[in-house]
Length: 219
Image (tube, rainbow, N blue to C red; front, side, top):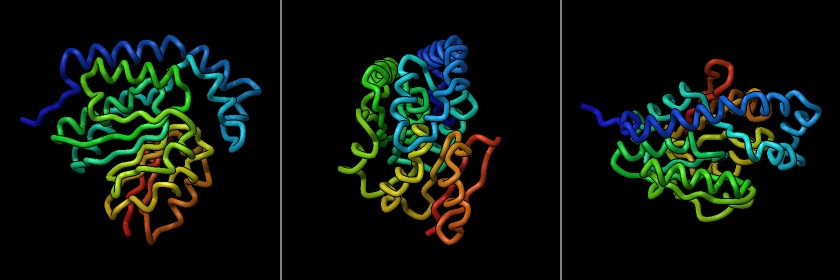
């Protein structure tokens, strides 16, 4: 039988609570994303202002995306994972649970909002997964400029959309053939999408359900 940490009562209860919190905050999220401030979402210079407005709003992946993250991490036998955009740690839980079930591994995840980083740390501790996770606080363009693993098996991009291409550039040298790059809401960063789909010599890239771009490093 294949071990699945996600099925433990402790884990299902924690994830149910976190998704319930996200559902409850949906009206506040919609108010911001439909306001004039929404234009900041894809700005390379004012993205921190936009995400500052969301400091008290959870921004988790969907349950389906979370399960996909778990399955891809398990099936590829990933050991080294990098995540851009921790929020409250929901996606990090799915990734870390897969690493636990793979036998070992490490996640570096980034969050520039200190209050969210603190809550994510608490959630990962409650999940019993904090020992697999390093949370780096601050702008990822700075926190990912040093001390990265020699090789990355999987990268999840789920932070400021305007920075996807720049974050990839910072970590690309660590990707090996077969490494996966997953970008949530990639449609909001066409520069990233265009690059991944046009660079057929190095990547195979396809959209999934219109929201998640899945790319595999070829060479």
